[in-house]
Image (cartoon, rainbow, N blue to C red; front, top):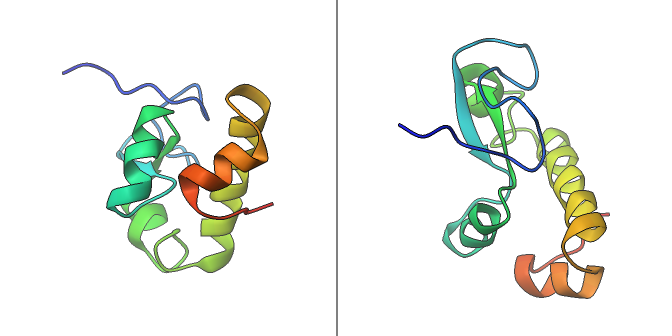
Length: 95
């Protein structure tokens, strides 16, 4: 299987938070509409199950979810397009 590449991190093989080698691919923007853009621009990070779906993961923790979205938006605005383009594709400004 081909390795997943991300524009947000260099290493998709270890959890971004704890370094665990048992990492899952977390699309920073989830939901069918946003996930399409997230995949196009490779806006994902590796997270272990606990940091992905646990109480402190982005699916249950608003602050962690916002942190990742802000990181992705900063990347987008520095490398892909401006804020207006970001908002038209992702629907909201997270910064």
